[in-house]
Length: 539
Image: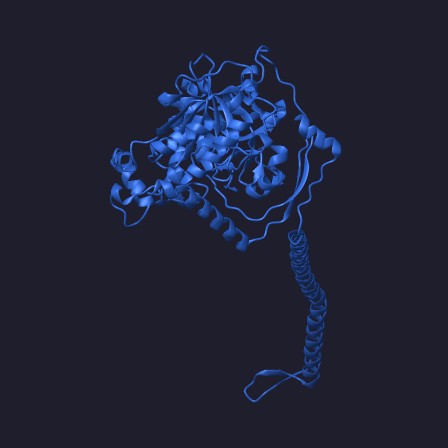
């Protein structure tokens, strides 16, 4: 290689060497640029693919959101359309001027012969008032006895007129179609309907009693109506004793009037409590403190409470607000204290009927005789009515029966208890027998096994709405004697009683006010009572 020295003696390359090195450097730079370009070509498609995937995901999410919005819109539109149609039909029905009574000549003859297989009535109802248990009827105890009846009638008219101004009811079609009857063993064939000794003068081993409860004098109007209709429909033939429990004092003159209505049956009236203040003061300190806190932040003593004080109850499933002590006491009384009351001790069977249950015709079957004939522990008119929900109930059934009951169903007319694992507050939903009308075997319900349940149900609570008579009668029957607990219809018993605007508790049969129906149909369907009973309560 040719070289040359500089002035200081260093050896430097000649021009050819410099030129060669320069070319080598350019080639290296060119190769590096080419390599970088190739790397960009490789990375570019990968980057584009990621962007494309993200874009597709965004599109998919957008499509899903649009679909959800569209479904919600369609549902809202459908509900609005249905509501509009129902409103139009309601207006059309409510503007009809005349009541339609559609009965064929054959059905009319059946009515006269008292063998009604089916009744089809189209009626228009025009107002009324409702009574939903204790404490729900408006009214008062008039000081002037002579003006009481007039005041009752005026109050009824005011309530009916008030209901008219709020809502004009629709025309209602009522159809009675008897459902299938399920087989049930007959234990005693000698027991016939309406054919056993009266209990008026003596009480035998299987005597029955009719029981109801009111809060006090404001509820006497409904009670008079209920007792008169029941007497004409049923009790004038069997003359069962009648016990009326009341939380407040009823005048002797009113009791005498009630006795005349049910005569010749025997009637007893009993105050069911020692006094509200006495009950509260006899509670333990912790129970009393808890109750006073439930019923008002400023309440510090029992003297500040009344039957109409509204209390709050916090439970696992929900918080109950605005519950009157009067209503809660009747629920507690019927769930526990009723079964061990001394007045019921001589009887084996009890027919419970709320004071606002009204008969619509003469009964063709005898429910108490049916109860005895099939050796049942419970015969009920309607199931289900609501449900007991919350973690409290499985825990109580575990305590009382060593079984965790999560639900109750009705299969072929009998009650069936369902065991399970339901400890969450929303996992247990126990359907209940409707408490407005049923017949119970008192020996069963006051037995040790059932009383253990009754006491566990009430526990340390006082004036609780949650632990009431409906769950009280349902659970022991379903757990201990499901095959001896029967729906009336499954055995061919059709009393057709009216309560809370429906027949036999079933919404599908009939919904309407009682007084307008009575005025138009009583002479035909219930002539035995049409001229004998004063009817002015519509609910």
